[in-house]
Length: 78
Length: 267
Image 1 (cartoon, rainbow over the protein chains, first blue to last red):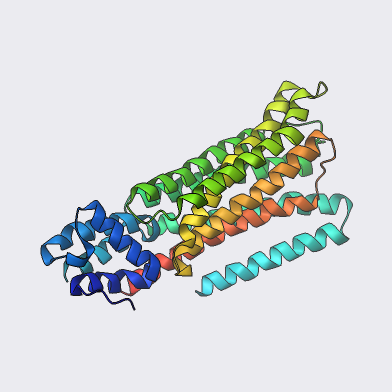
Image 2 (image 1 turned 90 degrees about the vertical axis):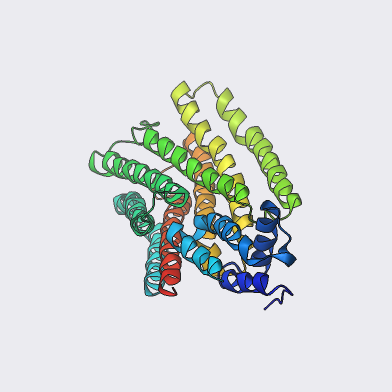
C-alpha cells in the first residue's frame, strides 16, 4: 500500500484503492485535488466534503450512484 | 460470482455449438440455427444488461448509459427476430430482400449503442479521473483514420460506384461499415480508459462491451462486403461475431451487476 505522509490522504487512498487499484487511486486523488484547487499532500478535514463529492461523481459511472455515495460518506466521515 | 461462471459456460456452449453447426450441418437446418442463434444471444444480452438497470435505483448518468445500451439491444433483438421470421418462416430469399425491414431496427439500435458509449467516454473525461496518455488517444484516432481510408478504398468506394446496386442497398451497405469505424474508435478509447484500472472486476464490464462492439464490427464488415458481392448466405462463419458480441455485452451486464452488489455488501 502506498504511504502518503498526510494521514488523511492515506486514508482516502485506502478507501478507494481496493476498487480502483493503486495507480488509478493515486491518479484520482491527484486529479480531484487539482480540480478542487487543493494540494494532495496537505488535505485537511474541512476539505473532505468537496473531495468526497468529486470522487463520488467520478466513480458513479462504474459503481452506480448509491455505491459512489456510500464511498463518499466513508471519506467524509474520516 | 456464480451467475458470471454460468453465463461464461452458457456462452461457451453456444459459440461451440455455433462452430460445430457451421462445420457439420448444412441446408435448411443450418439456416434455422444460423437465424435463431442471434435471437437467443440478443435475448441473453438483454437479460444481462437489464439486470444492471434493475439494480440502479437512481436515474443518473450510469443508468442512462446502460439504458441506452439496453434500448439498442432491444432494437437489435427485434431486427434478429424479423430476419428469422422473413427467412425461416416466410422463406424469403434475403439476397433479393436487401435491405429488409429488419435493417432499420439494426440502424436505430446502432444509434443507441453509439449514444451509450459516447456518453460514457464524455462523462469519464469530464469526471476528473486520470485520462491516461494523450499519445494513446492519438494512436487510436490515427489507426482509425488509416482503417477508414483502407475501408473507403477497398469497400465503400466500390460499393458506391457499383451501377448494379440500388440506392437503398448502397445506403444500407455503406451505413454499417462507416458507423462501425466510429464504434471501433470509441470502443478502443473506452478499453484504454478502463484498462488503467488494475482491478479487473472494475474494468471488466467495459472491456467486454468494447470487445462486443469490436466483434459486431468485424461481422458487419464481412456482411457488407459479402452482401455487395452477392456471396452472403445464412450459415456464414462470420455470423459468430454477432453472436459473440451479444454474449459479451450480456456478460458485461452480469459483471456490472456483481460489482455493484459486491460493493453494497461490503458496506
